[in-house]
Length: 389
Image 1: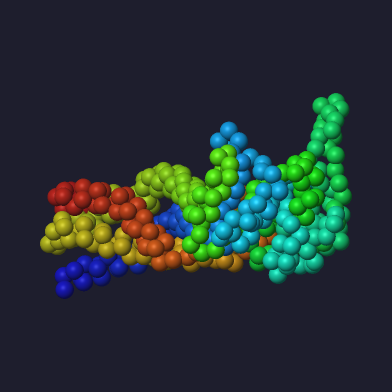
Image 2: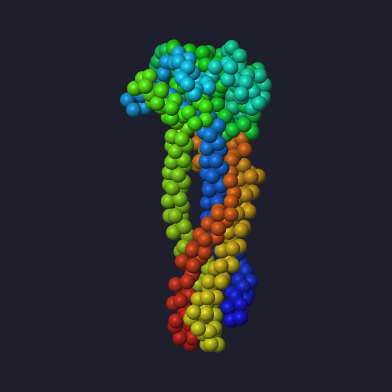
């Protein structure tokens, strides 16, 4: 019963000092909202990336070029398909290019593979001299179906320190749907022969995506390695490991930087919470004079922080949901999805969970307790007459 009475006293203090309590909650929310939003976007992006890898090829084959991925002869795709357990070997050309000053990813595929992407394209698949571009790229360049776009990567002259690039005009035959994937926002899809000619890779491709029957991956990998010791073979499991490691590293860097923000916030919470001020000292002195023990004063402070942390965490969670879902993660999504605009043209993937709410509550409690428990103890141990002076 005594603990319940102490809780009522703590709730009364929060209600009596409502302005101070509101300021503390707002300050905590200013710290927690970006934290929750970033965590949700990171988890959503990671989940979508894992799905993309899971639905992709089982093996990615390139040549080993000084420890890096190198070009591989396109004709090898036919030889790879003859291996027992292989269902399909798809040559691909992938490269980064700049289109009108904007970074984009160019993907060249055989024409027979366009049918699998037709459901995500607003318009027909690319034909000769045709391309399909991402919605974000189309909006930034003001393009629509039927528009012409000049693309080129070869510098054939430098006049007065200005590079002149040989370009070719392509017709935009379609635009990727905004719901397809975050990775298609700045993607340019074209026929593989056009991509080979653009990058001047005659007879070579960037890699070969190999699809195998279930349970035959290791067998196929061993068969491929026997064909040429300079082949660089990466399985789906390897790709997922690299993907997860990259996201974990980025999350770790973000968490480290945010830990510094949490540390800086402790003095701010200490100042705003009011502990150590003359009014608070008088309140504690009166409580001590009326028979309260030191541990009861500290318990009351704990309950105050508990209630404020619950309010701040819940409020921050709701604001984060609004920011990410309704405002599409404006500005903050660029931290975990490089190359996009401040206002994304596609739905930013996000995963909200109870763990994020719990972490927000835990962080709020740590911040408020760190900034208030010691000053409260210092005030509670002095004689009541001195505290109320």
